[in-house]
Length: 105
Image (tube, rainbow, N blue to C red; front, side, top):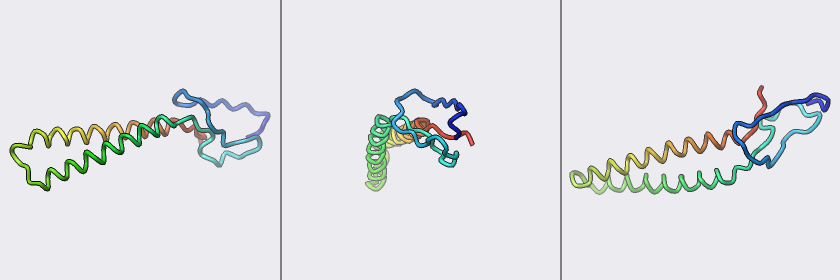
């Protein structure tokens, strides 16, 4: 990057820049030029991962216990909960990716 050229960068989401990974004279070989504060997202992802681990373990445990008729509605609920957590995790990971300001190349 030439110090005489102006380069406009715009993150996909608002936030506080916590690191800038390029300086004057650098070539655009680093895919991540800057990083926004992602602490809250990291904490949310950790929480969802814990919930997902519990939901997965609980769903598997109920299957191995042989609970059939009486637990079918609950099994459906726990499976839906697990799927919801998986979708939530995917969304958070997409948001985490948006906290990185990347080179357009």
